[in-house]
Every structure is written in C-alpha cells, then in structure tokens.
Image (cartoon, helix red, strand yellow):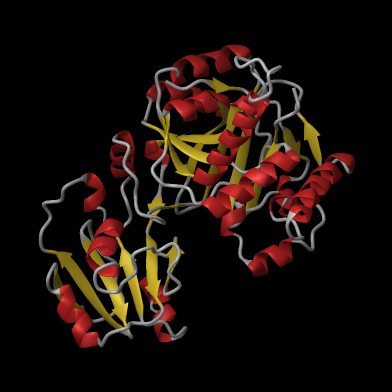
Length: 400
C-alpha cells in the first residue's frame, strides 16, 4: 500500500568522520565534542546560532560539505541496505524514499502526536536547507520475499564498512532497476509504521505541502520532495528498550505514596535493583529502596491502556503525583535505552532524585495494533535501539 522510490542522494566520502547519532539524542557535551570536527554532520543538523541565523548556518554547512567534497552525489537511482552489527544485537533494513502522499493517506502509520516547537524547528530547517539527513525509521510486517531481496543485495560488495558508537555499520548500494522494481512491487501491498522520527516525517510532509501550493508543480511528479527519506525494516528485526521515568521530588510521604499505590497494584518489596520480568509489572526505586508493582486488574478497555507506560501514566503519574502532561511537567524526565537497574538506581542514590520507574518494553506488535486503530501511545513510550545513523545519505530535495 506504499509507493517507494530509489534515491539519488549525496553520500559522505568518510562516513565514520561524517555521520552522527540523530540530532534529538545528542547531548550538549557530545555536540560540542563533535563540533571540533569541521567535517561532521553536526554542523548541519545542530548548527550554531539563534533564530533565522541558525538555519542559515545549516545551509552554509551543507554548501561547505559539497564545496570541500566531503560528500559526493550519486548519479544512479539507488536503494541501500543498512546493517548494524554487534555481538549483542544486529539488525538491518532498507534506505529508500517512501511517497509522502502515503503519509497523508495513512499508509505510513503514526503512533505518536507531534509537538509544535520541535515540528516548527525541523520544518524551518528543511525549508531553509532543502535537505534531509536524518532517517525516519519505519517498519513493515515481516515479509519473506522482501527479506530475500535484502539478502540478495547483501551478496554484493559493501559501499561502507566502519565502526562507530559500539556497532559495525555496513551499507550496500543497489542500482539494478530490475531488483529495485521488484521491491517497488512488493511494497505496493505493504503498510509501514513509524517507529522513530515522527517530527522528521511531519516536517517533510509540511515541506511537500508548500511545494504543492506552487501552481506550476506537477502533483504527480517524482521530485525528491515527494518522498520521505526512510529506513524501513522488517518488524522481526526490531529491538525496543524501555523508556523509563524519573521523578525529581515526591510531594507526599513514602508511606502515603505506597498506600495510594495499593488501590491498583500489589506491592512487593525487593532486595535490590531489578527489572520487571513481564508485561504489566513495573519496578521502581524509591529513595534507594526497590519495589515491584503487579497490576491487580488486567481487564483493559484497549490495547493502549494495557501498555505499562499507559498504566504508569493513568494510575500513578496523573492521579497520585499530579503529572498530567509528562512532556511539559518539570518534575519528570525520561531515560531511554538503559537496561542495567544498578545504573538506574544511581539517578536516585547518587543524583538526588526521589523515584525511578523501570518499565517493561513495549512489544512491536502492540505498537502496530494501536497504530492500525488510529490510536496514540503515551509520549516517550518506545526507545528503538540501536539508533540508526544520520548522514549515511543526504536527500537533496531540489536535486533532480
């Protein structure tokens, strides 16, 4: 049900030096370290400056990459296979363009709402630069024929093979129009789900709307801005880690808090740091002591309500702690991707916070089921891991 397209992107000459993590997970310390390297993508995705100057600096950085031949243009329409490998986990998928008309038609399915401020920022960035460098991570339901074609492409020599952020990154390029057309046909029957990158997708859709307002534009054109730069992977290639919650200050006593929890949960004191073992279990560290919560009533009204992130929000954060909007409430912040509970408890024991909630990760099948019904998951529900690199390909929206 989606229309895919090969790309004619710019690619880095030295991807190890050039590529970075996605802009929205780069902390200030890492940002400043990356900016010591003039050949890093960081100068484009997180440019210096304020207001309009910021976006003009992104344009300058992109033009500088081309002038200094840090990136080069691919002349042949191409699709790519991207793989990340480590001893602990490996995954792979395709880097392709997906029609933004499918985004408008609901065939690229969302599960989160976007926020005005980051959407405006990314839209301003793409309008100023006419370039996207960050991949929108999407998934399709496992399809053996698509996966077989991916393996066929991987039989060729790699275009990139380098190590960064603890993973080996491999990229294969496919220009054979026959193989590309086979993938086009296979995806005609597929729906894809946004895993990571809702604001990048929405800003690309806004850019397309601006282009379509031009009366001289052919609405059926195959212009680059008609397609979303996407990393699309089989849903059996996905690892989701928990997106945990930290409460800075508990506004009530420990005993009162624990008493209020008994309305909806069985509370089990634990001897030390621990992870939940299954869905509908939550562990938490309260001022250095660990507990396990087991949900008493599992007759939920919807799949969304059965998610542990939803249970925590609906039964604890909002009614007991008064945190009705976790995106804006300064008493809560989020920690994604951490798996070691001994590291989690440092946020309480060493960093002065009162409470750490440790959640069981969301299952990709639950995400798909919620998205299929037009549902919206709570903010910061999923941490897809490892993050796919930005800058492996740069989708120039004006380059035909």
